[in-house]
Length: 401
Figure 1 (cartoon, rainbow, N blue to C red):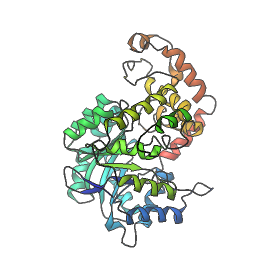
Figure 2 (cartoon, helix red, strand yellow; figure 1 turned 90 degrees about the vertical axis):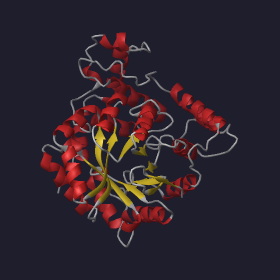
Figure 3 (cartoon, rainbow, N blue to C red; figure 1 turned 120 degrees about the vertical axis):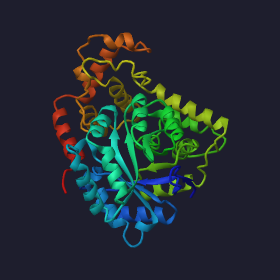
Figure 4 (tube, rainbow, N blue to C red; figure 1 turned 30 degrees about the vertical axis):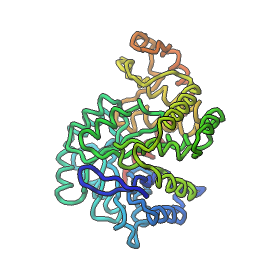
């Protein structure tokens, strides 16, 4: 296992972190505790020392599971990261209620790395105005949390405002070779690092989509490499190649995934890929983009929409369907993200478009946006949308103490 230092505190963290959002489950959907515990402890025994969870993962059962999995001396071997469900915070006092409940769930007296979960520009303003800075200062002072950070799913412009809005120790962003210009992106990665923040990466495999199954035309390109690596190894190595990255999280569901990721982590040095390697990854990214239905670059010039449609997010979900499949999962994520449940914001659905045409003048790609939004609505909305939103509310708002 290789390790990198967290810039502000000098912690030596394993470059591979264990993400506890996709633990193995039984047929009834509950965590397969025996299997999951074996995987978590095996990873720790082989050098992983950063474990990431959050309030809503596995319907609220991920944190209590980790509390049990890290018994028998394993708690002392790792840094725990978990997250405040900011979309559920209504008053300032809720922040302490959630943190205290999480300490109890995790069976610990402190959280090593505590994040404000899933921020975008609007939710940052909301939680900021509720006094999150005072809460974080207080929780750090009394020892309940050691390091304060945030995870992010908004645009690059708002990202800088969040980074500059508090004396953060670290942040967590989505980043992979397809998402260089999505959300915080490369610019955000570099900006956070320039401000001295450690950067933890989520979705290095785009939710496993860059692993298996890989489209034939993509696999043909990978097979042209001089050094043979699996798609997983290529994707992880590409992220680790960035010296600004501290930890890369992987949500592992099977023992073989732990083995493969541990093997990849043995060689995940910064700046270790050759120019030829990087050109190959770019060609693979272009192959994936050829499979996209919409040539949206995520520039967000269209986002002056008077109906509040999140046009880039709609197109990202639509493209993911045709690049990777997995419609059931995407239907749920569309309801949760575009329905404002994860963002604590208003609805941003494709069907809200009234075809005013304002976006057409703004789009540098000259996309027929209103027509495309109709197709998105046909794929992801329909009569079951409200039921999916209700389920998503239960899934991501497990408000029990």
